[in-house]
Image 1 (cartoon, rainbow, N blue to C red):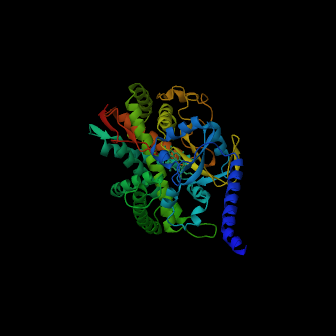
Image 2 (image 1 turned 30 degrees about the vertical axis):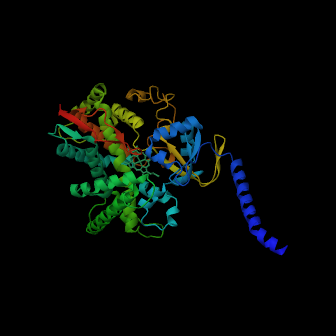
Image 3 (image 1 turned 90 degrees about the vertical axis):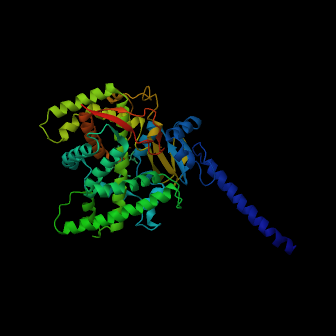
Length: 473
Ligand code: HEM
């Protein structure tokens, strides 16, 4: 009898454990989770998310499960993808109430070298506040950059474009955007340093959305190595900057501001932390802006009618200025048609697909429960090509922005919305419009390979760098 009891004890324990799991599953089911599929064990649906077309990933699932919300497992996280203008509105209006920011593990690992794994979980509020607080990216401050932005753009066009028959738009746009970012964020304008950094930044951009497997041959491994190289370079720059500041050099860039900033207890930020933050800012402001410039060249290169209208706008601005006078704020306000063109560029080829949040508590959306701790993803792809909001969605049609009441709010959100809306939006607008002004004023262009493939699913990239044949007016 005693022996039987001892022998059956493990069976009872197993039965109890199985029972508890079954009960837990049942109670999980009762929560009415959104429809969808978690995919394969461990990887979930990450492979189709990262390596299929991002637009296809969401549109297929919106059709299959629900146009409002679906569940998936991507980048190691149970995720609810919240869709459509109502979804965008809900997410942007509930930041810090229901949601907090979340970055995929690959990004956390690349940008948080200074933190222990425990402190890496701290929400990014302080970080985001710091980027916004010095006001460097606000229009008032940007007005002061504008002339210099124009000057740097002109210099680059002279060096890399003038006198050439054919150029590759994408690599040149990247040199320009990294030069601008290095100038205004870091206060450096040494071309050699910048070209040394460019490949590293490209590796990081690819590694941002990757499975964080750190062994040779993976995207994440390359991104990690490149992040280390950039940090090293930035720490050298920080030391140079500190030395220059003690001898009275002016503090006209974001880096100088971070060096002198103190927290509530009067402590300065450690150098590693400054390096990580500046790297984050450079990454955010580099490839997005270069992508918009490049696809402007592509779409406008295919449409001489649109090119002529842009040219007319810029010639009028040019004629109103004295010889050699640099662009000012009023000129930018006159570039209305060009901005409509750029909106259409970003609708068809969004420089950034979307971002993640984390649910701070259980919440209900469209009748479904999303448990606390799940990640929530929003993406421009759930609205950008919906014919209900954008008739003939595949057509390049800048005139659709002429009446901004035509499409409902939250359907066109290339820079996000709410408190987390891209802090670099105005900077990006100035940089891209300044580029447009200088390139259109000087050149006509034709696309060399009209069938060029667009690769890089999370970051759209023309496979051959978008070669264009240019000729002066
Ligand atoms: C065409 C260019 C750009 C596009 C389309 C773009 C788009 C976006 C989007 C969609 C977000 C996410 C907003 C959200 O999560 O709700 C974002 C965030 C961000 N962007 Fe941009 N961006 C661009 C340029 C820039 C530039 C030039 C900078 C730097 C000067 C920048 C810095 C940032 C930062 C720091 C964040 C994170 C904000 C936070 O989490 O609070 N971006 N951007």
